[in-house]
Image 1 (cartoon, helix red, strand yellow):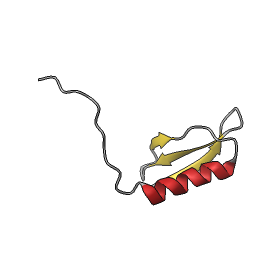
Image 2 (cartoon, rainbow, N blue to C red):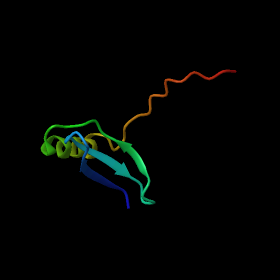
Image 3 (cartoon, one colour):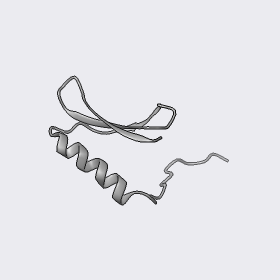
Length: 62
């Protein structure tokens, strides 16, 4: 099961990471001074990005 994990880093900032069902971390957030800000960011991702587009800015070499 996919999940968000909220944790505190060594500097005391709140961060979250998104983990795949196999336990592997897929991405992590920036640091937030308040836990509520990290929770808000998670809720925003869940609400606003279910169908997010992919903007591939790499160039292919032919």
